[in-house]
Image 1 (tube, one colour):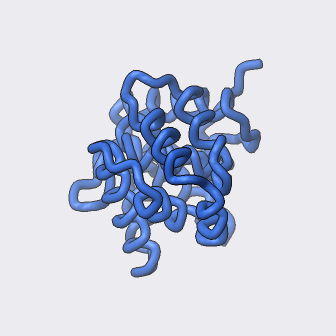
Image 2: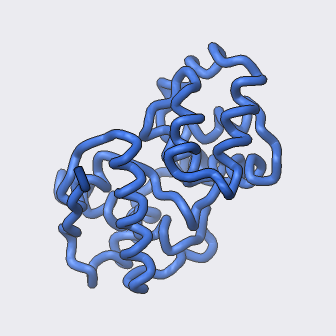
Image 3: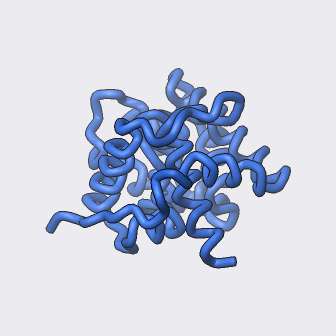
Amino acid sequence: MVAYFQLQPAEAELQQLAEQYWQDAGERERQLEEAAYEAGEAIRNGEFTLPNLEAIVRWKSERMVHYLIGNSNENIKSALAIAANSEASTEEAVNALIGLRGIDIAIASAVLAAIYPDRYAVLDYRALEALGHARHDVGFYAEYNAFLRRLVECGIVKPQEGLPAPTALHAMERAVWQWSRNRGE
């Protein structure tokens, strides 16, 4: 079964929504995101450690951090090595990460986005709402990520220089998340 996505916000709104996301973020949210992308860069550079994984998990779900200690250092190192391997498929990378205690598909997507912000987007219920969808599994994430990447390739959002992960993909992710937040308020 192939997932169907339909962008809910107007394309013309997306860049402004991406900017609003960062403006509306609190200081703690900004610090957590900056720390997560610094940790992702460290992982991309071969530092497959619990503290790097913890920084990313803390950014997306503080309540899941305590589960990470149930993983051995070897299991963390192995999963992060697969996730950071640029040759790994989306499915291989996600499956390696969800094999760790405290990591579900949404958090695995955040780990991947922190490691490769121009290749992976975070799977988030707000972003899914902005795409007219709400299903979560590994195949779905791969389709969701590919859909966002195709949108970005159209040039409808630009990288947000000076922010963590200043990529067009992350700007798109911020935009669709902000669109959902605005609708909920």
